[in-house]
Image 1 (spheres, rainbow, N blue to C red):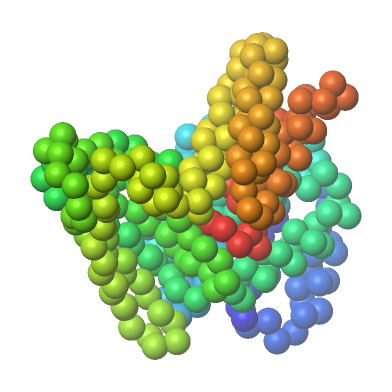
Image 2: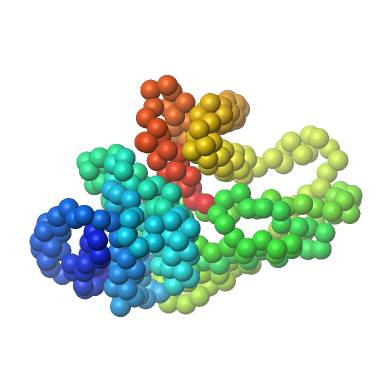
Length: 343
């Protein structure tokens, strides 16, 4: 392993230059010298860390920055959009940033956008005691990475159009959609959810038809080569309600419901920010009701939906604190490190 340590207050400082982790004490001693400073130059810290990472960047390695902060960016760029742009630029270099916010004082919008745009993880630590478990999950993720720089391209037949994505952002233009994942993890299911619109001519005749082709290409470190997989998108058109009901895919329905509730949670954040706490609470209650209705019909209750429902119910309880509520909602928008299901 190769690591570097960067600290930041009014400016970013390089505490340990990128090097092989052969002497742990070098890292421990430098970290123990970190003291509180007066300001928070998060952007400069990430840029300096990325510079150290580039010294040894290799497609056979997992190239990851971990940003830990308990404060608000107040030196240099400080708007979420600027950090989203930084994250997107790093993703283009096959670098992901995982962000960890500590306590109630950090800017969750800024840190969430940086993680989301770079295909990293995001976690909210209420107290320092939570950090050990969060870092353990993060390094388990690193060890579980089995493919990198994954490109997913969907080419649709005439008469089929891509309407919108329901999970990660991608490029959607008419009959083509493209997505980028910096890494995929062994033992996890990865979803890209795309809503399609079909012309009447495609659905007029019953039977099986091909709507398009999905191409997945990725770098496999073990073989040091790029691999490509291609598969058709097959659908079955039927006028029978029974056949349609039998053809429902519960796993896809679970994934769609999860993403719809997460999108409502985003709307709830905006409503709370605008002072409409009552409307925000109604959206979270709607999330909980829809999850409970789905879980009541599920042969086995998916753990991630049960956990989401528990979180939404807790957030609608009258005893919640506004600062931590908002951070929990932001953290719910993307699955945490170690999740068995990824979007």
